[in-house]
Structure formats: structure tokens, C-alpha cells
Length: 314
Image (tube, rainbow, N blue to C red):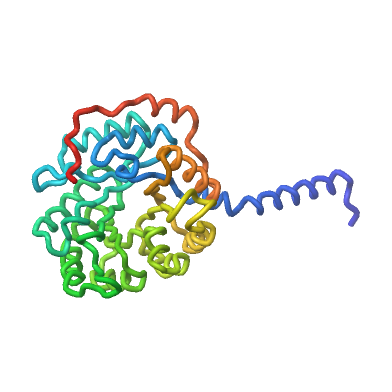
């Protein structure tokens, strides 16, 4: 059948449009996947207070992982007044509370500290009250579950028991307890299987795992459906220039269709905020994500956190 010149041109234009769309699909898929970039409050010198949201707003980040101060034996973010302050800061800055981090367990091991079960309850309730889902429970320093390359079997058993007891509360409130440690994906999966609850998952740190000699992309694939959030930090320098190669990591994340927060942690150099701003830009470009609108940044950066917070316990 003969094709008119107009029909030919229309078909050609449609083909070009389809080709252009196909080339954009990877980036568009990531942009629609719900990936967002945040930062740890301790990494910008604002642990335990709403100042972190102000600083995150200044450098164009979308969320903050917050950590507690210890007030007596209680976590500061468990207090209703502190939660109110965070909610007001979220409203003022447009920066979200991405997740809550139980960082005190680095010096007060969850496996042995008698306050551990109460802290888990406070963590779960505060996470629910602040409207987020993932948490981080840290197992470094005194809380490390390894001695050299060997698992501390007694400590692991105690952690399994305490997390198994807390899991029903977390599930009921829509909270995920994320364990971040020095273990391999295989060892973490064994722990998760012993706990037996979807409310307990792995909090994955790409730099820690790289430094630990693990195959990060392979571990991410192995942990499909079991990672609640990522720490995106480098082992040295800026992303794209030195240290961790993010490209195979991003590929693995695409393959498992992971969605959620990418939380920046640790900086190199004197310009801490500038460092995180550059790394956020690199991550957004890699995943095809849009930066917050300029109008949003201008509005949120004008807010200033209240002063007078108690110091963070060392």
C-alpha cells in the first residue's frame, strides 16, 4: 500500500520519539522509584537536635536521619515535646525525618545493656510518632557482633532474642528495625531468619561493606527484600573521583528494584556541607533524580533551629 508523505513523516517522528524515550527509561524509572537523598544528623555536627534539618535544607537535601541524646536512661526523641519540635522543623523546612538511629548501642551494647529492650520500644514508638518507617540499630564499637572475624555467638543470640521480642510491636506500628553491623550479608540473613519477622531487616552501609572486603553489589542482590535503608558514604574523597564505585552498586539496586532513602554519612575535607552537596548531586545524576525546587530551598533555608538544646552525651 502506498504511504503518503504526511504519513511517512508522522511515522518517522513517532519512531524518533520512541527511541528518545527508550534512552531515557533507566533514568525515568529511577526518578519514579521514590529514591530520596538524606543525611545523618551526626555527620553535619547536629546530633540530637533539629538544627540538622536546617543544615540539610541549606544544602538541598530532602531528609535527615536523627539520633537521640540520652536524658537519664531515656532517648531524647521519645519525649513528646522533642517530637513536637521535630514536627515543627519538618513543617518549617520541608525536610523530612527520614529515619531514626539508635546510635547509643555502639557504646551500650544492645546484647548486654539492661536498658536495651526499653530503648527498642522507645525507638519504635518515636519512629511511628514522627511518621517514618525505617530505623537503624548500630552494632559497632562495644556493640560489635564480631571479635576479629569470629561471630560472638552469645551476643548474637541475645540480640536475636531482644529483636524477636520487639518485632511484633514494630510490625503493629509499621516500623522496620534495621540492623547495621560489620557482618556479611550471609551472616545477617542467618540472623534475620532466626528472628523470623519482616519487621527486622538489614541497614546496609556501602562503605563499611567495601572496607570489610565484601562484594557489595552481590550482597545487595542477596539481600533483595531485606534492606530497609542505605548509608551512602565513601571510603575516601568524593563519589566519582575516589573510593567506592557507585555504578555497579546502582546497577544492583536497579535489579532488585530498591526504593527508599539514601542517607549520606561521613565527609572528607574541611568544607563539610559543600562535600555533602557535591555527593548528593553525583547521586542524583547517577539515579536520574531531580533536586528540590529552588523555591523550596529558598523557603526552607530561611528557618533557624531553636537554641538551648542539651549537649549530646559523649
